[in-house]
Image 1 (cartoon, rainbow, N blue to C red):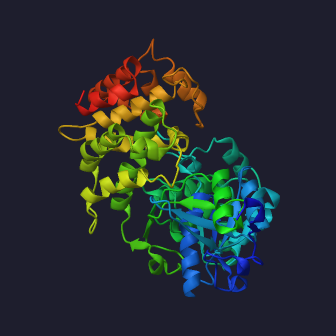
Image 2: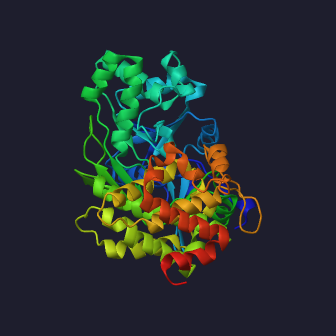
Image 3: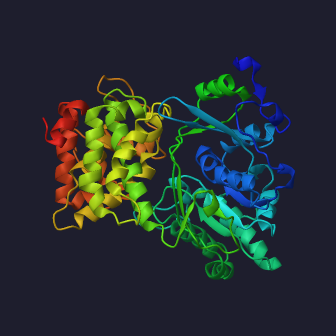
Length: 496
């Protein structure tokens, strides 16, 4: 089928679609029990998919999802989903080229808060809403990475503290909780699904700190009555491209403005603590547990940190897709060395998980050519990722009698070299980072100050005062400048 002949996705079109699974349940009978901030690919590849599974089983009709957007970029998602009756296509891409597609119907509404702040707050104040979930990115919690404190002086937060018309997720959620308290309604659970260690505790700190600054009495009520479960989600979900849209139109006959593509692998581990009930997540493959931390450590310190290990070296070596980079034996060996030597000794055991099988499985997942995850996506927003994913590995290792940080230090050095903004062929690198100007300026002071990049305490704390780490960093960064990324890897691996 040609792209021009594809059927525009909508509720009315579902009956006409062939070769793709569609919701068999009656969406008109589904009511919202969850409000979600940050409706992007990651949320739609895991939480929305799980709720769709439960709806298909007939066990979650009061757990539909209402998305809420707060950022200017969220207008695009509003427009795309609204035009499609909030439906979208989820496509799993297998390593052998097979595609499996289904239409997801669990999102039943979407509000863009700047359009109508009152409507967004009242939706959360509705007694039917029992969970407010979040995928607002690692940097979306407004936490200073050195002090660990919520930043009350952020301009948007400061606006909300002095206004009755909040603009941030913090202001909107806290105001909704205030109304529930005043109306005698049980509060909702606040459930973070972002890639942060102890993400529930991070969310609790952010929201309660904001609440204390806004209304101390309300904050005390939130402290006592609202729960913030920790969670860990593992599913590689690259940015949707026009090629993805064209392929879905051609292969499945669906014209979808914003489909989601992802790997087949799926894992969601969730702490079983909720204020006002939850869907039967365990019936859709979610691991509901008492303690998420061991799972978090494994995912953040192996998968997420290894992504950083491949992306800067990969870009400097000329790769633009993650699978191409990981299929290079040098990069694959480097990632396994980081996982085995630096990361694994800092992990806690997880019952039933064979860590020695998990690590090579990651290399296989990264090497899946169907995903076409870009190196640029993995390199983006490094100032939010490295401090939260990799720096804790380094700190834990430095606390050991014989610390091993050579590979983690090399990853930091490769970020510094990448952040200079010029590759090894003299071509510009488009650095995407909320601290772009700062990190690039620091990286480019290398000739006169080899440790300029490490002096940013917000990113690295006091690592510059750790001789073992600095020596390993210096060795890697010097080699990157002198002989380049491809020759540096054998030196690090001891095979040069």
